[in-house]
Length: 116
Image 1 (cartoon, rainbow, N blue to C red):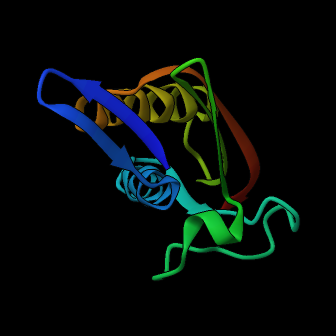
Image 2: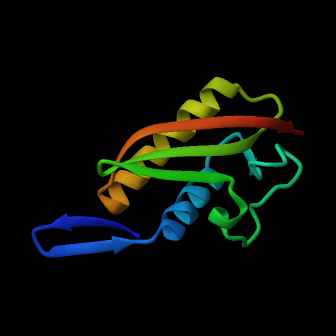
């Protein structure tokens, strides 16, 4: 559980919620064909209703009140990988900071494969 303090009090946000939010945000991003299991590197797509944190396609860590995010994806064949990953990282940063108030210090996107 991660906590945010504001003028009204303390708010607790579960890591499961954050990983689901990151997974949903990634699934709506152009050029992202799927999220991958970190261990199997592209063998399984998990855009289905699955717990993103349990499947380890999203790695989330907190250091000094700032979040570090690692994300394993498959991109759509023919898209500019650099543009997709930059757009995805910026969209995730904006969504997390806007919805939760947590500052995101680093987002690492691992491209594990391409899908036609």
